[in-house]
Length: 231
Image (cartoon, rainbow, N blue to C red; front, top):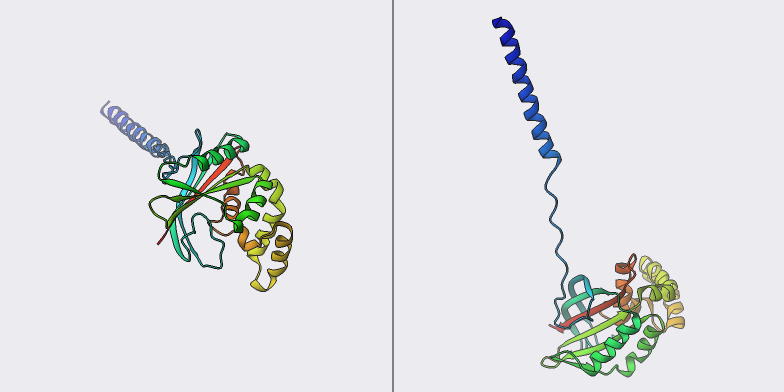
């Protein structure tokens, strides 16, 4: 009888141990859910169109010289400019975004003045508008070394119209310097700009082309803000 009780107790002990192990394994197999990533925000004080959502915000740095085309952000001359690049998506139509740009030029946000697009950028602006993009330039009213480029685009239209150029630019960046001249010539003849000018950080075209991949799977229009100050 005592032997039977001993066997029973031993079986119970093994059963409890097994239950404890299974319970422990179950806990390890179901870790806490990861904390959702925080929504990106607009670090500039230039307001977006109503309803726009920030997709990405990242630091921006670019060194320019007098040979490069001056833009609203780089109008303070040669040197290094630093600030922020903001990419946002909007369900507004491209026409609505263009109207927003024009209204922002007429009535700039507090602390800014609109900059008339200079003659040196008129061709760029014309090319942009024909290819699903538009832009406006602004300057900090209190700090002439601080400027902004605000770009609006229809990513689908831009990709459809500039797909060939984007393909050439991709090949261009993979080629040695000695083999780039033919691609530069093709782009210059068709669009008025070389490959390096198409992807120049901070330029309206370069900013828009650089942001196209952020809208690959989105049915949205895009807004890009380059907010930079000369250091």
